[in-house]
Length: 614
Image 1: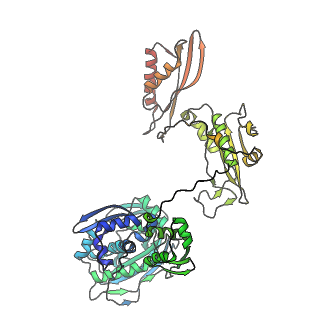
Image 2: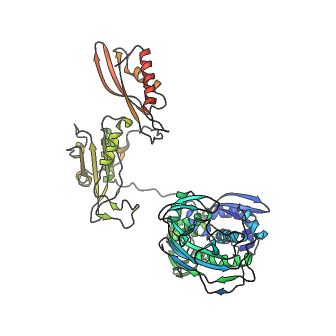
Image 3: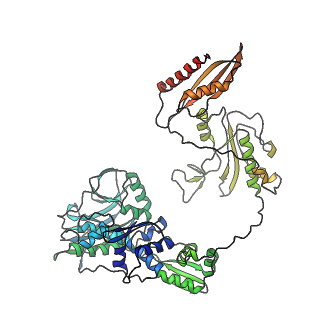
């Protein structure tokens, strides 16, 4: 986020700030990464990397000013915009139909304004941050967003069919945004509408239908609080990433919604007001107060986690610097965190705040204590040994999801709506079928897979299962050493019962005796592979490796793995070797003609050697 040093100084501090480099260094040491500082048009712009955990309160000049005040101990002195006007009865109606996606929406009508160019001070503040000045009305909304972090919007009242704003989901279709871009909305996207006309994509970007112009006289101001997940999904899908969507998708306090409305109203009256301007009362869909949040932490807990020896008075001093109210009983603090600090939920969050303000450089370095030798986890040991034995026997380990579409144990907060249940068994059928279809690409003659994982029964308890599946019934039982009976080509075994009967273990040493050969991973293709077989007669004295090298040398870049020998037999002083060759492209689906040309090259090279293709 770009922040103007002059803006910070003039709007939030009576005392002189240190040089911009000192301010940037202080923020770096206690709050944020600093991407750079640039002198620009008599100002200095600080590029601050505000991470999502602090986007709630610091994607704004005010949020950064509070951090500077806190770190440097310089009094915070917020200036207010004064404006003279009287409210009259509201004529606007607001209907929020999707309260789960918009839990607060405020609208206000202002009549008889004059849209002017922005004054020089406003132009400078926006332009130094790379914002183009449009007019005083639009610039006022951008200024509020950059100053306190709450997006707002303005509609031309006279372009509305009725004096009603509806917050609803769309039925889909093309939508013309500001700037002549056209996007296609999907059913369920949240929009701001007037009757059947959609005015804006909620929280993301306004539309052309009620766009304000130089001729606009009567307006509707908007300040809303939209669901961060809904905004993020729509914004990403449409490819529209705006300053507004960034604030909403990171979420901020709902308390900003009415504050921004009053702030914007005062700015509009000052910048665009006339002697005939009329300001109606704001229409608020939700006037509930934000519930106060209290978090408890003990000085002893702070010291234990940070490795310091702070006194109660030092902790209290840090909370005072934050400007937070608190009650103290013994060494326990009950801290009233402000609305904008949505990131503070528990004692650990408060410990982090104390630590960064105290200064991590002030935390002493200590030698770590020596750990006593830990006891061996029997289950871990035998699970690892079983995996090793199966892999040495030609099995491949697979992982399937613990979440399923049907079942008995339903989660209260599922990761995905399509799989809300926990599995009661391990089903390898889908993975098995996929591996069988692709075994030529994998370079295996036979698919043998297994998984060891947890399953969940109806009372909520867990069981550890081994499931395996093979194309053929095993000739030998590789798990006999563990007294595990493999009786079919697809079965599940309760490993907890098996492991309980096995001997106790005193050391992990046997698990990691062999050195693991490093593997090189390559990009896989999304396009289908093609197989071809070739069988060649070679003299008995010619090693088959010569044929393999010839195939590889003439197959080209589309060969995705070494040729695999699938058959051989000897006759009359010659040996027939049959190889399966697998081709695949990273860029497209291969045609028979393209693969056929490669095979012709290979066969020609075979003929030049004096060998015979069967």
